[in-house]
Length: 495
Ligand code: BES
Ligand code: MN
Ligand code: ZN
Image (cartoon, rainbow, N blue to C red):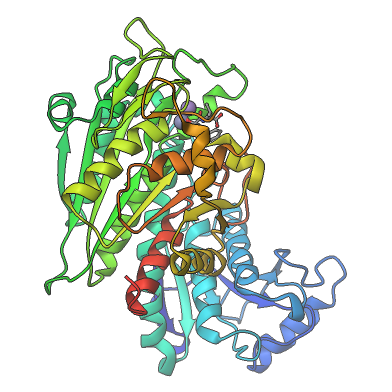
């Protein structure tokens, strides 16, 4: 999708140029561009406000028929996200104008931000925004751009090419996650979703294995099987395996919640918004897509991703409030609410991975609690870990990708809220307060001694309204966050 080319040797003819304009700072040294930006910036209807678009038609003799000017706002408010959003706004404008192949003039502004950070953010905005999910419509309203040309100086070309390849690997994986999340639940029953994940992962060179009901029974996944028993669709556990060329000394384990539809079970959810529960496999989607992004960028650690997939339904065979089940690690769980199903399928999976793989780091991603949305809103995920170094790295990865992840507590004394009269644990707290925390504390009971973090993405996993970089629907949240976090930990020797 991205093609880096020196201006003089442009291989194909772009239909538009894209120029970035800051309210109070010139971004281009070259005279023609500088003059044009200066002129347009002063138009009151544009004024280079952040994400504002202005189309300029070019005279006949110019190499480009038109230019899309995109605003960045004020110099002192500039950050990577401003560039990301501006680039995304320009792509959206190009799509609306029915362009096929625009060319982007990267700003020369080294003064504003470290130039690599700026360039990377721009490339991310371009790729993230160049996405639609319209396979359920007879006619698509907007067509994605076939190609986006990045015009670079010859000397910078190879550096930008490397950056572009990395960005494209990760951001097109984000597209995959979005599509899976937006797909309606009738087209992603557990087997079908498992097929989609498996196909996508295998085509990127990942080794895949899957287990069905029988194998899960043998392994002792009592909690996951309890959730699955209400649906006529059986459960699946998909695992993805990656090995680096050189033998790895570190192993990372990833887990993603894959509930293809969460009706609540016998503790049925109210009708308002139940249709939104098709997104309850967004953690699984993020983990599979991250695995694909990693397979493309080839890190030096080994990883295994485990994705438990079920449908949570009420029926004559459904698990009941009050039932007790035994999880993989032998702990018994009294089900006090069948709508707290995510933690049950994660419990077995986490305990199994910790036991069998003994990973150096284990991360799970889940649309786990409405309470996390109450705490942090629609755009910020909750990050739970007892490892302060990891908490810090996670928060920083959140800032740098703008897939923000706020550090949340795991207070030991709150464990009393999960005490059951009958079993080792109950699956929901005795109080509604602090629901995101008690859910995380429940998971912790299944992680053994493994270094672990839990990421609750209930808020940002699905957009009810389009954002700058993403149409309404699945957001693909978590893919850039996890990829950035793991690459960072690896680079800094912190795995
Ligand atoms: N999948 C939901 C959490 C959720 C809610 C995700 C809204 C995205 C948007 C989860 O399975 C759930 O139902 N959690 C319950 C837990 C409660 C029963 C303790 C909740 O948050 O209400
Ligand atoms: Mn639920
Ligand atoms: Zn759920």
